[in-house]
Image (tube, rainbow, N blue to C red; front, side, top):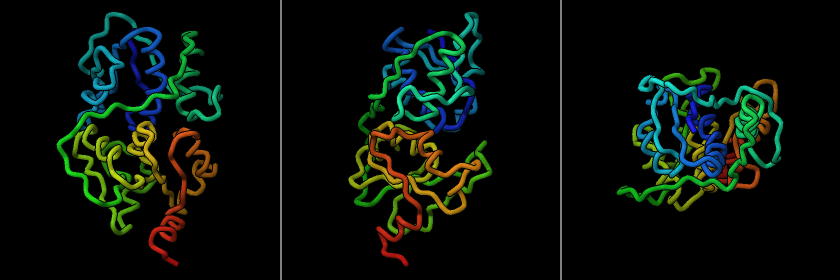
Length: 239
């Protein structure tokens, strides 16, 4: 099956498609997968995706001359949830396939990213993933919002995704992050993590931040929503 995911070049929204893609692979076999050229900004993404045993090939769209018409995969559709514990964004990909192609995707809610062994030293520290300030980001939200938190070793996003996935999976403490793409990766690694938010996004798009959390994270995995202020109080005892 030839699949072209053309609706996003944001890592978090993109990652929400993986349980759907895993379900398609189980039903139809290894997928020929095309993604947007803008996703080159994520170092090692194609290699990381190929390691998951879902795809026969992964290519950027500017390298592909498609003779056969691909199945377009998008999340620009209704938000109905067939499983209330499944992220709304993942459900939207599922709904798109049915609404546009009558493909009943058996979403693989047990999907967990496979991670290779990496030659990297993991420090005896709390690891975190802040919101980056890279290209093509949503400028309505601030970047680098967690840098003031002491004692946190932040991921280096210039490293390839496999290296950062290895660190997230193997660091001893819960991962600390905010609403950014790397937290979606942690959710599908089934890593215990705290997803932190500031007062500036406590209401987002005229909805409480808990709705944004429900959009992107499994309710029955190990991601927990917490305000930055509550985290500071719990960890540092700040008043």
